[in-house]
Image 1 (cartoon, rainbow, N blue to C red):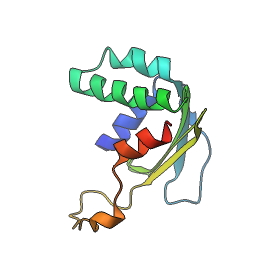
Image 2: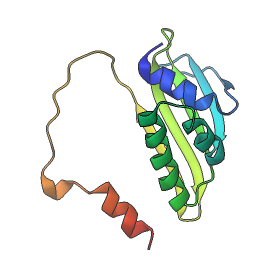
Image 3: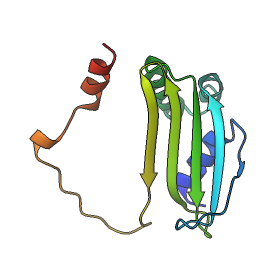
Length: 131
């Protein structure tokens, strides 16, 4: 199982994880879990310091949006590599819906930064969304 798959499965192990359906998407299996932020906070205390701190910062951001639980779907291929990951939640500031699709594994990539006019500081965006 890939490192990314392990991280998602470990996070989902806080909630109920099960095979949901077979899909025609490029991955043969999907897993769904729902976790509360209280579960994530509790688990963060037992993780290594850096991982726990990252989880706690994530929880703080979800709390600011009014999200108290997250539903995660992860599609894995026959080699148990994550192919797509989706995270959803309902907050008092609107819905949270994020999907990441993994197109390849262990291949070199070239990344070109976009022009500054086409970028946004996410921290500033979050502050403006909060009021």
